[in-house]
Image (cartoon, rainbow, N blue to C red; front, side, top):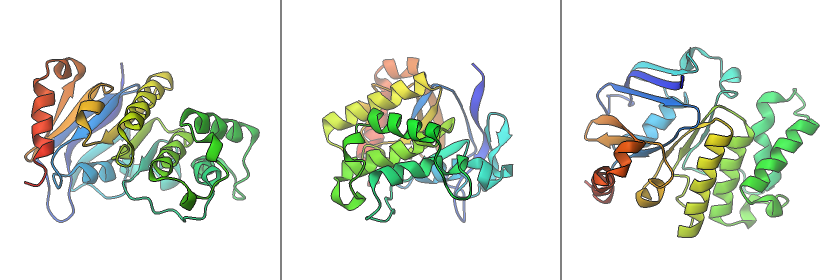
Length: 244
């Protein structure tokens, strides 16, 4: 299958590089978990892939196009990002928050078409938040708020979706259900989903690849590697020693 996301000789960081050169690839249908200790650069990598911060060196390509050469107005049609911070106004309704995802496709008046509303409704149902769509953000749980943010990213209908700690506010059952839904949608809708997580034993059940931060390197492991069990033990060891 052709590469959808290609990371080539990438150095990430702010004033100095956090890693050696990163070379990774992903295809449509991949769901990838980014693993590593706190402070190793997981969020920095996601921010770099999203174009929020510039790479120190190297390139990121989506479907053959270099991300930092794409206009911001066009970039929002090919990549969506949900950070670990939930900064939206607390009085916005869930429906209106999710509907923001259609903004790259609407006119200057942000008028939603029948197709836009159909897409919004479908993903509200997919993420089980249709019943709270008229509630303001401040009145729902952290888990519901997180699902609404992820739903907004899917409504944006980009081929690449980046999620920073998407299971952080969910209970055990809800974490399983969310990752199951993400894996189903990645395959069904040909999305490439990259997310960071500390819930490794759950995440490993649903992913196709792992990007493991090991000291100052980032290594890629395929599904076959995950089945051995050794990678899971290694990753959990890294994760549980995150204070180092």
